[in-house]
Length: 239
Image 1 (tube, rainbow, N blue to C red):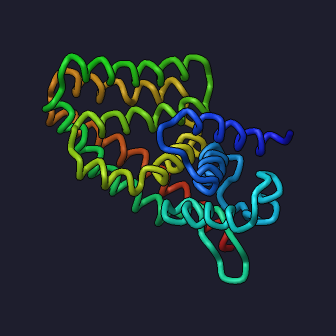
Image 2 (image 1 turned 60 degrees about the vertical axis):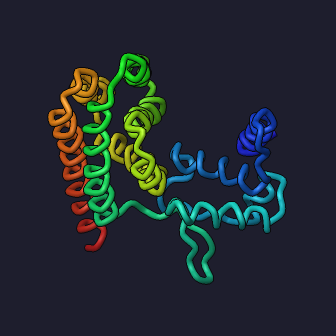
């Protein structure tokens, strides 16, 4: 069995354990999303319906429905007469994401610090320790996943429903952005873990103003560096 189809079989097996069954197109979307976020389908990669349908042993209609779901997450775009594409990350995209992320995650860090409890502190520390452990193992893919996961944990700790809903709209793009940022800028894995330590400590101590500032500075510093990198790359490619 090919590894792509194996992922689909695993998705079907895990979904059978849930209370709410997921349709085939949702399961296919899960698998394709995983391939995009892991870098197996990198930016600029064309997604051919017939190839995906054959790999997943599904109809083209089911695959098309899955791809349409991913367009709402901006992980896939449909080009007229050309099919589907994983969109490249451009400097404008990076700027929009890091400025929006800075606002949302800065607010989340502030609210999480204000609402911290011993139980929430345990969840936050557990999430941070997963990032540290992945960095110590030298597992870059896991670091990317746990980098995103710690920010998602902070969002959840706020218990701010509307903030959570707004973050959910862009969370898959942020996952892709974090992976691109950590990979393209070649951050040291231990450095990535260290960058989060001061923010976690501020939230843990209930210092709302400091937590917000650190979260915003973290997003802005990395974002500005990534934007500059992409702008230089775009200028080079345009010559």
